[in-house]
Length: 157
Image 1: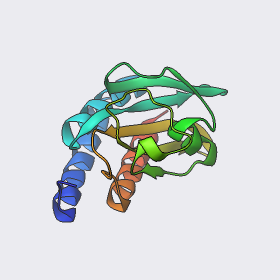
Image 2 (image 1 turned 90 degrees about the horizontal axis):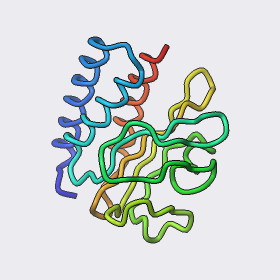
Image 3 (image 1 turned 135 degrees about the horizontal axis):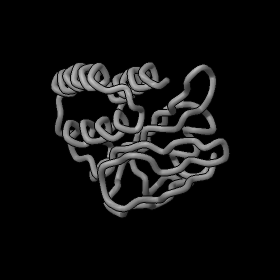
């Protein structure tokens, strides 16, 4: 990890402020997800994918993201995104190569964090962030990214 805990927290606090500003300026859900993925990609170190998979009632469908071409459909329970969506729990995978249920969409990904997006008890989708280094994510990332997702969900009509 190339960040100190203090530097990481400071980056996340700025990220949350920037996200709030973007949400105040725009009410369209798709536009907000698109800018949100760009903001995450620019802010978080070593990011190779930052984006959303949206639940269509049956499976997760690729939404706005920053990164290389990616998987477009993920069944609930499959891969880290599908596991997070099915359990509605944040998942941190320090080494995707060792995760039994991992779906390789991009060989550059080494570690991953997935945060479920749940509003009024209903699954909306997941926030998926991959890093090109192992052991990138921890409880600090989880805390701030869960707060980040809640900001986004609060803006969704």
